[in-house]
Amino acid sequence: MDNVMAIARATYWRHASSKALYLLWILLIVLISSATRYDVLSNGRSKVLVVDLGLALIALVAAGSIMVLGMEVPRELRQRIAENLLSKPVGRDQYLIGKFLGTFLFAFGNVVFISVGFMIVLMVSKTPITEDFLLPLIGIVGMMLILASAAALFGTFLSEVPAVIATFLVFWLGHSTQAIAHMSDKMGGAGQFVLRAIYGVLPNLNLLNTRGEFSQSLFANAPSVPWSYAGISVAYALLYAVVLFVTALLVFRRRDL
Amino acid sequence: MKQKTNSAVLIFVLVGFAGISWVANQIFDWKKSLSQAKVAVPTQFYAGMDKFLSNVSWMTLIQWQADDLQMKATGSGDKLYQKLNALTNLDPMFADAYLDGALSLAASNPDQAVSLLQKAIDSGAAANNWKIPFYAGQIRLMNSKDAEAALPYFERAMKTPDVPDYVESTFIHARCVSVNEEPVASMKIWYEYFSRLQGSDADRRRASAATRISEYAESATAALDMQIQATTDADKRAKLSADRLEVETIAKDVASAIPAAPTSLPAI
Image: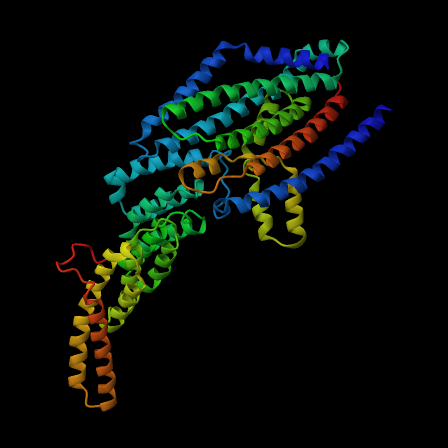
């Protein structure tokens, strides 16, 4: 456990020590706050724009931060840093779990940083903030779990660039997998069963995306997503992340270093 | 030993994926029941940024509409409809886009305007927004000149929360148009509405309805008098006389509700 925490800490601090990163996050918060100036251009919808832009950027920051993991493991393997580590009494499982935890904490810290800035922007722009604001953020944390385990998996058998591209594709296409479920609903019999099974196995990030529903409940009087949904969807993300990460461990154990 | 562990992990992974598949499908069905709007539109491939992109699309649409050269070009109505359709696919609950878009399309292409508003109704955007079915009804009534088609929209608007009074009186007006504003039938439609209005808060509406009834009663009496004089058939004359008596009775019944000075309120 100490080994895992040591690797996690080292990974976290290596990423988090970059000062340019925090400047970038501050610029993002300024960008979100600048959306309040778009009232005329958006025909009186600047508050909607602030909320939608803010949540979209938080999701992008989360995904971007997690993609570091896809690059981290293959880079260390290529530079033989991992080999040095693994020659010490550190198991492959411990190494990968440490990398996963360090990167996840780094991404989580970034999301918290931007979210606090975003909330300050909302308060200044007098947009009502309710506890429901946490619903989309819980979904983003769930998305980070799945993406981190996908990045860990790809990092174990792909080189840096392909691993990052594959993680990005999971982020991009994972939000649209419901197309398969909708297609299956139009079919009947075995076709429907097979497509639904395929849909279920894919990383369904759309199940965790409640950003649109939150914004609509805030501005269009649409019903809000219940807290129970957020809880169950994040439990799904956790389950998916565990299974995918165990797959990553299995692949990493068999990899010839 | 190591191989045994790996086999156990492999079994765990396979069983895990089967379980995940079941859980994901349950959550999908749950989410589908929570937001019907997304089911009504095609799936978008924008990495979950649909809602944000709908705002960008909205701002570019406003600029496009403000450009005279674009809007006066041939086929601009179809282009506008396509843009609005794409925009509302990104955010199916975007009420302003449906309403502003339908108003822009109403004069040139009422069918497309109503189709856009129907999409809003199908996606659930009209559940708490009376304006969407009301605009659809108005476009059918005023632009398509199809009062029959307008009636279901007005009825839907009347069932929406926080609906203003004039939606119901517009519905009554549309019903009269659907009977070609035939004086006796129209008067009865307004009288039915008048009789339903109770309480002190309905005084203004009762006055407005009474004025309409009185106007229709005048035309109905004149029309019935002409018909009574023109007919030689005793049975028909008796029926027309009975109708005339009914018109007079209704006119007398509502007379006390008519304001002394002509009301400045619009008829609908």
